[in-house]
Amino acid sequence: MTTDDRFPFPVPYGWFSMGRTDELPADEVSPVRAFGQDLVLWRSGDDWHLSEAWCPHLGAHLGHGGRVSEGCLVCPFHEWSFDAAGTNIDIPYADKPNRKARLRRFPTMIRNRHLLAWYHPDAGVEPLWDIPEALPEDPVECGRFERRVGTAWQELAENAVDMSHFRSVHGLNRIAEIGELTIDGPRRRIRSAQSFNTARGEFEGQLDSNSFGPGLGVVRFTLLGEVTLISTTTPIEAGEVVVRFTMYHADGDETAAKIGVPFGAEIIRQLDQDIPIWEHKRYQPSPALAPSERPITEFRRWASQFYAGV
Image 1 (cartoon, rainbow, N blue to C red):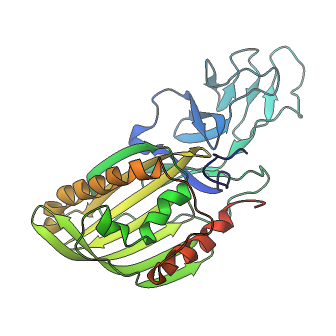
Image 2 (tube, rainbow, N blue to C red; image 1 turned 180 degrees about the vertical axis):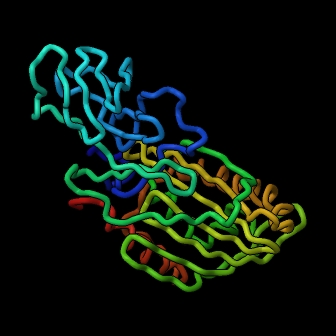
C-alpha cells in the first residue's frame, strides 16, 4: 500500500463507514473507492456486501454493469457469478465453477446508522473487535455533514488531543485539559471538561469521547442537554479521507433539541477551520512539544497499533 509523501504510514486497519444507511446507493451494484482500492458495493435484499472490483476471470470491473441474481454478484463481461463469500459458484458455459476464482470480500455490518466495512491489508485477518450501538434511546438527528479532506486519519484524529489549537485556531478563551484517559486495545476513552462557543455565549461542557479504532468515534457532549456525535473517518487513499459527522439527541430532551442545531454548527465551524491546516501540513515524526502536550505522544502510541507490518 502506498503512502502520501507527507505521511509515513499506510492505510490503517479497522472498521470504516461506507456511508450512512439512508444515503446508500439505490442501485444494487455500485463502484466505490476506499482503502486505496477500487471496490464494488452490492446488496441482496437487505444484505450489503463489499468486494474487490475486478473479476478474477478476465478483469472486468464488477461495479460497472454488474448485477445481482439469486443473491450473487454477476460479472457484466461473461456472467460468472460470485456469492457473498467471494466464491465463484457458476459459469454459464461450463459444467462446474472455478474454485480458484475468488473475489476478496470485506466483512460488513450496520451500526449507529452506518454501513461499516472491515479492512485489513491481509485478507485473511477477520475483524478483531466489534462496534457497539451507541445512539441515545429514540434518537433524533439534529445535524449532519460530510467533508473530503486531503490528509491522513491520524492527523485528523490527533486534533482531539491538541488542546492548545482550540484557542489559537478556534478562538476559545482557555485551553482545556485532557481528563481521565482509558485505553483498552483498539478502544480509547477520554472524559474531560471543555468550553464551547454558542450563539448564547461560551458554555462549559463535559465530554465523553470514545474511539473504536481509527474509523469511528462516539462523543457525548453534556452542556445543558446531551448531544451524541457519531464521527466516522474513511480512508480513500493513504492521504485522503472522507469525514462524516452526525449528531443526535434523545427524543423528549427539549434542552438538547434547542442547542443541538447551533452546537452542530459550531462543530462544523471548527472542522472547516482545521481543514486548510490539515491539507497543507505534514506529519512531524519527532515533534518539539511543550510540557503540556504529552497527550499527543500517548495518542501516537495508541494509533501505531493500526498499521500492519509497520
